[in-house]
Amino acid sequence: MARRVSPTRIVVSTVAAWACGLLIFFPILWMVLASFKTELEAFAIPPSFLFFEWTTENYITVQTRSDYFHHAMNSIVIAGGSTIIAALIAVPAAWSMAFAPTRRTKDILLWMLSTKMMPAVGVLVPIYLIFKNLDLLDTRVGLVAILCLGNLPIVVWMLFTYFKEIPRDILEAARMDGATVERELIYVLTPMAIPGIASTLLLNLILAWNEAFWTLNLSTSQAAPLTVFIASYSSPEGLFWAKLSAASTMAIAPILVLGWFSQRQLVRGLTFGAVK
Amino acid sequence: MATQQTQGLARGLLSPAVGLLFVWMIVPLAMTIYFSTLRYSLLDPGAETFIGLDNFRYFLTDPAFLASLLNTLVLVGAVLAITIVLGVPLALLLDQPMIGRNIVRLMVIAPFFVMPTVSALVWKNLLLHPVSGLLAWLSTLVGVTPIDWFNDAPMLAVILIVAWQWLPFATLILLTALQSQDEEQKEAAEMDGAGAFSTFFHLTLPHLARPITVVILIETIFLLTVFAEIFVTTGGGPGLQTTNIAFMIYSQALIQYDVGSASAGGLVAVVIANILAFFLVRIVGRNLET
Image (cartoon, rainbow over all chains, first blue to last red; front, side):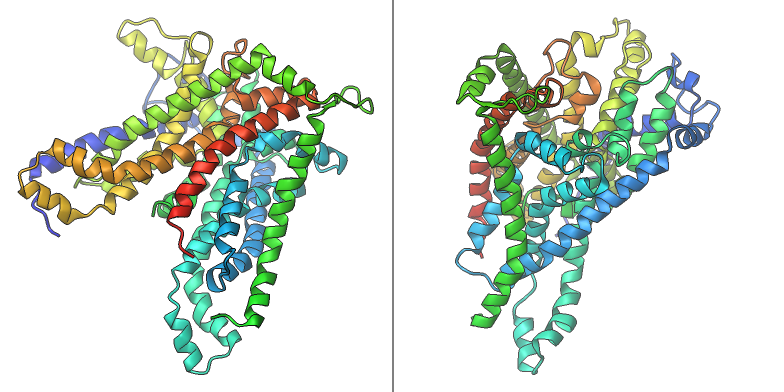
């Protein structure tokens, strides 16, 4: 296990890796810095890196002028709501496929995967028209429903791969001890399933928070989540870089933190278990 | 193993998910197919007439279709190439012993969690702006005239933004795969006197073949329908230079209100994606034992 590694090699790889890491991370860092500048400074050439008048004014302006929290709330409701509903539908489904598989289980799983492959743009027209006729355009309910259905296959898949890993022996042991089905479910299986469910919810929350096809096409103002709010900066008036940066920083901060916690699950979820 | 009763219960637990997904897939798809045979404009509702396959003829012979198909291929191909070519060495580097590996990992993975509209606008303004962007400033420092990215090389700019978002994904998957590589095998190779290059080409690269395939397939599925990045930066322009299939369908449906033609285009997109999905499903299905 312990391989001898020369100190030179550690130094070289440390320097190289930090250089690459900083380069890739730089746009985010630059955006965060810009969010604390005045508009004039954010636009100035040559740019100032750290030595400028730090100000939090942009954060306040973004809220007072464009009601940031309204959109943040929409994001929370839409991402959170769609995730919870998807989980309520997916947990029983994944459960039954993992613990009582039939001959068709594999086909059902692969079919679910294939629904995820359908490009959203292929059904844009009918969904838009259905939403228009049902008065669902620009409503939170509509977006919750769409994002829930869109992510359902991933949720089922991830849960399935986690549930498959719960050892069967433990069930048989509990049954031998005379546990009833309900007791088995509550005391044996649930505690073992919770970590998998939690990571699935986390990944789904991230995907729903960042979803920018349906949200851009189906909402404009009332139900617009942060993706759409930020997009409104694409046709602004006057200097806006610092305000754009402040709004963006607030929009990505919570998800960046959650994302960092869920790196492993990300690989698993997005590759449908093909890479673990 | 399972009794009749649990089988029934299992079916009951499964059916809501299956039913919902079935409806979600079939209803809009059926409507798309139906609309694609109609002359149907939202500006002129109630005047729908059946025109057979005319929409397909119209969509497929539209010069904009060929242009946007090419743009789609260029975008997908370029981003795939960049993310794989940079992702492999980056993953290898992150797999080396180093100080602060976790922090570096966090920095590398971060762009993937940034919502598309944010990355597109931050790149467009703060970094690529021809006068006040950071890259413009850097190029004047070395005496090069700054590039007006979104006018002179709009597709390159979009590629850059999308590649920045997907490089972390490729790197993370390849890194995960590397970490499951057999250390002993590598040690044995080293002891047999295999150099770094031959170890890479004979052991590591074959080991990465499958994860690379997975990255290519999954990225392709997402990259075929890149939308938000184009929507907020170029709006498909200038001209048609950054219009991909997804954006073309969007503009036909919600800007020109031509439902029929957009539906035909949507079906074309579905067919293209399905061809790719076929391969992905086979790869995933191969290592799925139920």
